[in-house]
Length: 294
Ligand code: BMA
Image (tube, rainbow, N blue to C red; front, side):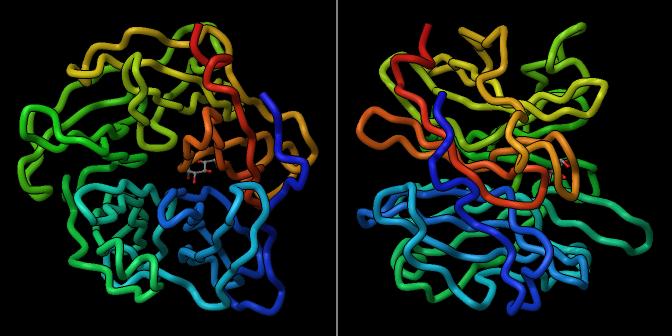
């Protein structure tokens, strides 16, 4: 495990009203020879919007927009759109995120939308309909597999405290929900577990980074390997975390002791993992694929 030398790679910008306070928890997508990041940003109004930045090598940001790429529009997200995850499939970018609202009381749920890859790459933010796969259910951390299995989309999501799966033919109706991963007693992931980035297909199966929380509310990352054809069959779960808060930018910030990832890309045999440090900055860490696979 190696943290990027340039960490943090994104910090708040005092001149941008929507990202003056914190930037963190970034989705990542590799397309058109670039790594694209959509990150969660907060300003003085405490509402989460999504900002856009990109990189030609994955390590250094060489493009960053001054306006958000995605902002709340629905009443059910009037407190913000949080923790985006992007999946590229059939020329479309599917985006899942947490819709957070304060009416009639504070509540969060998963929302799902999409944009064509062409619009995404030309930064024409023509996002489609915002759908609520499990309307009214407190749920977060949804990721969609980049390939259908037996004709159905596969989503992992998190109903506290466990990681669940659900299936859909049309992205609207989701069914066959099941729990696939529970917290482990006396471990770094003893309180709750949830998806990090959407799983990546490799020869051995689906490489799936997940987050675990312990009773001290320390957020760490671990790794799972899932059966290529059976999303419910977990072949491997790392005993130890692969990344935990150690650096000052992970230990101190709005929420201390947090590494939280929503995006990773596989580039030249290296997994680049983008993560939020202490809910305040965007960072990166890399792994040789061989290191991650026991
Ligand atoms: C989770 C989410 C993340 C956040 C994490 C740590 O519940 O809200 O956005 O990074 O808590 O505070």
